[in-house]
Amino acid sequence: MDAGYENFKIGSMIHDARLEKGLTQEELADKVGTTKSYISKIENNIKEVRLSTLMKIVELGLGGQLQLNIKLK
View: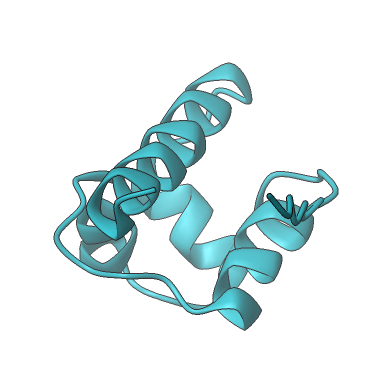
């Protein structure tokens, strides 16, 4: 699968979850210890997110649980 699509998908998922939780980008950034600009760049597929940062966003910022899946062909 194309890496660009995966980044977009992650950004879109973060965006949707943030809105579902009723958080602004600034509120999410404060919870995670980053900047509004960084959250915006992730959501808009401008910046790739590190796994450790993604875990913080999901767990600390959104109160969720990150699940990864590997599929072999």
